[in-house]
Image (cartoon, rainbow, N blue to C red; front, side, top):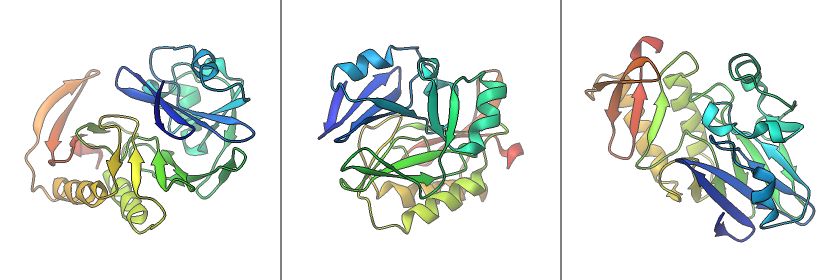
Length: 229
């Protein structure tokens, strides 16, 4: 795992990051990737503290090694998709917007960002003034907004609410560029609004058996299926 900053690491698993954060008393794993890596072995290279799992959402590229954990934190809006569509295992421990997970001298706040999925979250590392994990904020990457789980209006509302906070400066996304300034947020909001307004021309593409459009907004590319708007 690569160290991002003090007591914080990330493993890049075919384009998606698995994060490890440690405190005085315990550690937290954020997401488990898409290739079924041995998460406990990854953790053991950096700490012997007891560790728990939190999922930013239930898309398959974030949950491949969830079965290695008996329980996990997840927003309850992801539960039905996780259980019914992804055959997810483990006891779900619900987390809601504003909840705090204390690792011992290190408080992590849950921020709910619906839009990419109904229960998408990111984690605010209060002490270090940064957000860790999640798909809604990326730079030079692809933001998946096609399919019935996605909602562009909710996405915009989530980022607008996030932009009003003054307690973070940097984002460590799950995909694409490793470290992103908060300055990217208004650019993503503007791009999403321009897509809805028909001001950007999309290019037809197909993936996972679905047809959608790719909208390049400069800072990132939105993979969007307008019929689900």
